[in-house]
Amino acid sequence: MIFETHAHYDDEAFDHDRDLLLQNLLSGEICRIINVGASIGSTKASIALAETYENIYAAAGVHPSEIDELNEESFAWLKEQTAHPNVIAVGEIGLDYYWEKDTEVRKKQRDWFARQMELARESGLPVIIHSRDAAEDTMRVMKQVHAEDIPGVVHCYSYSPELALEFVKMGYYIGVGGVVTFKNAKKLAETVKRIPLDRILLETDAPFMAPEPFRGKRNDSGKLSFVAEKIAQLKGITRKEAEDAAEQNARKLFRIDDAS
Image 1 (cartoon, rainbow, N blue to C red):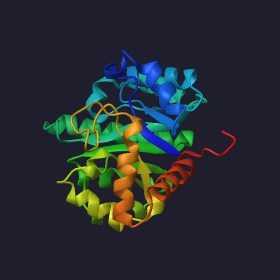
Image 2 (cartoon, one colour):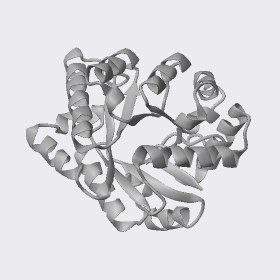
Image 3 (cartoon, rainbow, N blue to C red):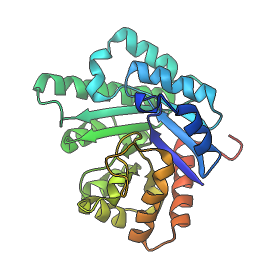
């Protein structure tokens, strides 16, 4: 079975067939899904999905590109959501310098990243970290808040194998999705080869980042078998071994036992 650790089924791309799609996925090879918040609104929607479907969980957090939504009032609301029984992570949080070039806004991203990391510590939840074109500052903030004491995953990993090993040393998992199947994804392929199997999580970032041969189309968790197959090839194992290992890794990080 496959544990989908990062999807956005609240996205409008699923408005026309969301319920049917989720029912089909969860009655097939997908055992669990984490629907990840990226804003106040999507956190609310993620929690609503988790309340509707038995094997869907929510992550509560604000993406770096949405930090204008954060103030003391909205942050207090976000803190309240971490106590919700269906919320199992804080995320997605982090830094995104690809879209943001303004130095003051980047500083605000770092400040809210640090505060949401501390929120995870206080709530006892793992984090889901988004980091794009911000490797150095991501690591700097994580060291400042002693992230080695806050479990989590670096989602949609895009940096070097060497940095991935540094994250692993801090106790972090590496989220691997459709990009690993792309012909030009040599860094990620090398990263998968070099990091331990027990530190890899399967994710889609649906509806985005569909694997080959679906690149450019709407993504969903049913396509994770293509990601698992590529990981298996890189690791010299079977697809089932890759899927089973990633599922156990996700259960461990997000503290989900067989009775959950």
